[in-house]
Length: 328
Image (tube, rainbow, N blue to C red; front, side, top):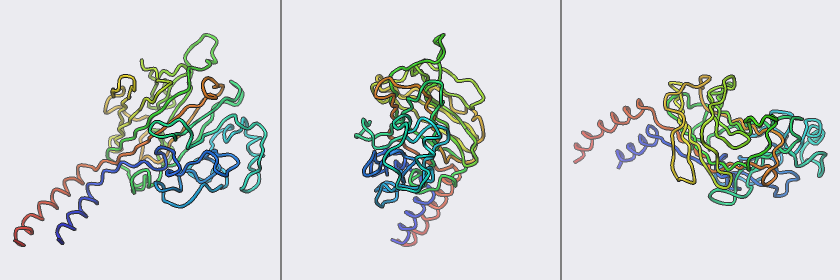
């Protein structure tokens, strides 16, 4: 029995492949997300989003916090239900709980536990229907934590393979600022490390054409894929933090098939020492569909053991064989 216990410990410690859905899981109350539930405004930057509930550390919530001090924070001049930084600053000038009313509300925000959902009635809704060309994009940063990585601190995963998956449903094709009708950005997601390096970006344009690039300084690679605006397509990234490369696959829900659109071994725009943060950017002037809302759901993170760890495990297992024989 002692050797079986040792074997179990070796498997747990050396062959740890985790696939967790917590902070950025399905954005349900069990993941630490609520639309309102007693809060004046349920924007993720105003309460402890992702830090309570059965899948995110336990405990009760939501609890209002100093704005932008939790896992989610507004990075630009629009967000948190407000169309400009002045109104938002005025709203959060005191300490929580925040006042019941605010100027310019219901313009730009990020809200969890919002329907519809892909596998339940919960998803993340992002909205920015501020006037086109006035305040610019909504930009939020969300930090990853141990519950996303199945108990492993994201900052400690500095090498080897790492897989990230998610599903999304954009709003219908929306306005294009260029009168010529050229394709313009709508949504951009960036994957960052703890020092702010951006390894890659993906997104879609105003007509929901899927795009990707390795760096904000480079042009978008425009694919032939147009995201489904009535159902949930998916994307999956295979990161190699040792080689600083990535690959990207796309799930077309209408065909129910995954397709590789960025080949394995594609160089990252900047080397990522780890993967600890996601940046969400939604452009302005979006109002088609349900208030211009774009939805995201069912995140997954998989930390894959490196070959060296597997070799160490194999050696440990082989050393158990003679021990087991002697016990007989």
